[in-house]
Length: 333
Image 1 (cartoon, rainbow, N blue to C red):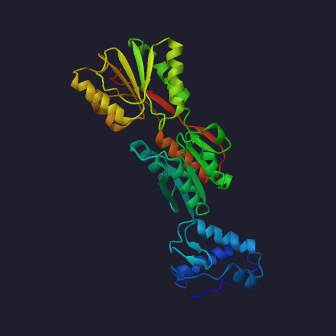
Image 2 (image 1 turned 45 degrees about the vertical axis):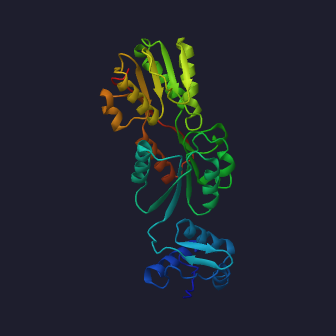
Image 3 (image 1 turned 180 degrees about the vertical axis):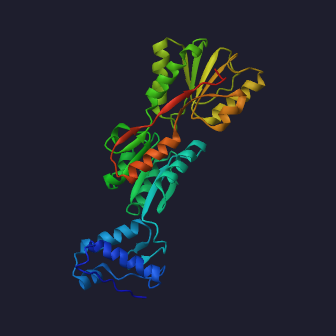
């Protein structure tokens, strides 16, 4: 099916918008269907005496919305009849867990209708991150990237338009030129441990279970700063030790897997939280409100993070927002 796109000169609507509306109307009316080939850029340009850039601007917007797609050497084809989608967002997470799900749901709710969000995961793998960004370049209106602790994220996102990229959660020094909603992990851990210092002082040693492959470096720095500032003996482990728990030790546990291991050991040794050992976890969940009478957490507000990110994109703001955090004291210390 060949559908000709005509542009008028006197109706006060930008010509690239007229091309978009013409294609949308053709899809709505059934004159263009999924799989149909569009007239070429040169055909539309010559018929309407337009610049090539005007036609390309219209095609790029439709491509970003997922309505048309280019086929190398053949031209552009209709790939979706859902013209209600007017923006598409590429969302790249490190992994999915309960609090990231809260972030994702809040982001969707605050974007409103007619915006499509496609979510991807790099699983802390630099090659996967690079491939996902490279494969999706030019296909979205905006790109939201959660770099986690990957060091070379800048090399991957430099191929994207700078004003279309937003950084989420960790803001590395080399990404500081990009708008972001981020956590200040070093300050957060230091400040909240300081708030709980009246409860922490009864413990003889603090232990941080820290995975350098997955955990933000700021957590490590904030922990060391607090221990050195308070002259408290400390130890840093990559994972839970096989040896039995020792009375008087307080564990700082950023990930839930190691938290469960500690709780399992606690029960096997008939220990009681806050009496024999202490536990502070990172990122609050419903489970942590209940298990063992409640686990103390240091947590950011993931719903607020999703809301702030959505508002930045909707309002086209280029700013940096440090996401709020809090200490929730429960029975584990």
